[in-house]
Image 1 (cartoon, rainbow, N blue to C red):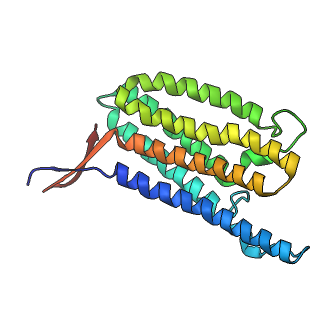
Image 2: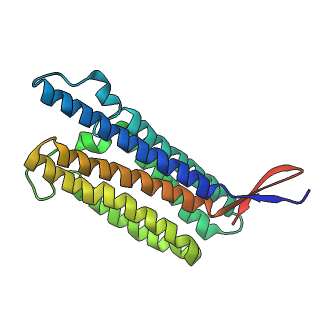
Image 3: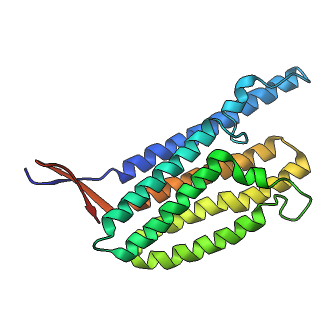
Length: 230
């Protein structure tokens, strides 16, 4: 039978985006329920299950989802880089660098490395790791823009959107959340800002995965599944 092209990028991105929104929504709902309980009974200890859904806590459902998403996207990116290496070495180099960067971010996400190295301080940026993070972001964006010259204009846009979403959450809203935390404490404003921060980071990775999948064709024929560079 003739090969049939299989396109799953759009569908997968939509599913993952819905899951990301659901994870953040559950976090907000759990914190709201805990807050209502605290209002009803001042001084009560927060329920034990709160930590498993709170986006502001490490080693829980949001962390595992965000970290796993980074791992999967990094591995897929490296695999697609391998497909492009024989015919499109510049694209392969760009994707290889991106894949390594995503895996490095997954390590940070799953271990909470930047939270351990940083902290809240009385400064304009509030979180001490934001300054080195900003420097790394500038370097990453320069490399991204240079690497994107290897792909077509239509394929650049999803990568750029992914970068805007991710760095808006990781740097801009992270800085804002520090200011809100120092000014108002761990209350509604801080929870909303951090929820938006985590959601933008997750959606940025989802869009990055979609952008990478646009660079590969999958098809099925009598011999089975075939993957080829787009």
